[in-house]
Image (cartoon, rainbow, N blue to C red; front, side, top):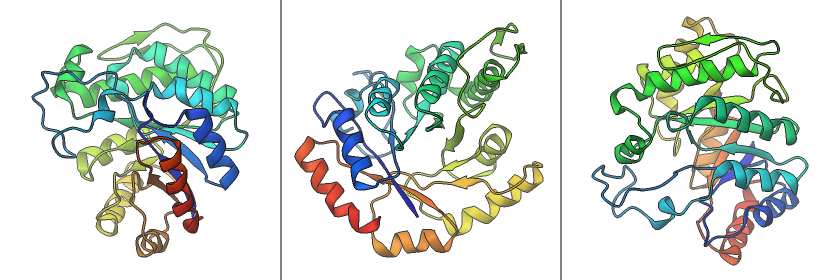
Length: 274
């Protein structure tokens, strides 16, 4: 089983270049970074992870800038977002950033996509909360048009792009796309429409959810198997063995949003799972 990691990198934590080098040297598979542009101080949305909201949510580094730094100091470490709030981005600009990072890293990038939980943050980006899922689907389609090998136009309900020259292209034509969110028909409908797999937070209930996902995958005419990558996992030997028995071959372990000494001690603890 491949063991990757995720962390809230902030202006107070270990730096991305230092962390990436340590991860690759120790044999970890990858590094996934979350995204929040800002956390409105007047927030009314309750945090699903509990209150009070930890400080790192309002301090996290831009994931694409940080992953670019990580890519520059590593050769094989996989890089990903966990997750990108696609609704909060201009899709033409985001398509360029994704393609550039994937190209420069030699195809090492995974795009984790999410719908978000913070209504106020999304509103500041002009996002109507009730339509954000449809908006993400539309923006993913627009980005795929820009990643196409030949100039390809796209006209959707929320945006459009003319047939355009847009280089660089992602190294493999398009990055792997994993969709975050809770199991259910709505999520699996989105996942089978435009993603390559699922990024379930914590990985609870997978024994029940996986058969439903596989059924939806086949019904949508998708071939092969959807990737399933449990995310932000607090590891234990029995838990990882359970994932392995379910056929899961990649897990993302949660690192503390801390300075270099504490993060490196945690990596030493996690080395037993490699």
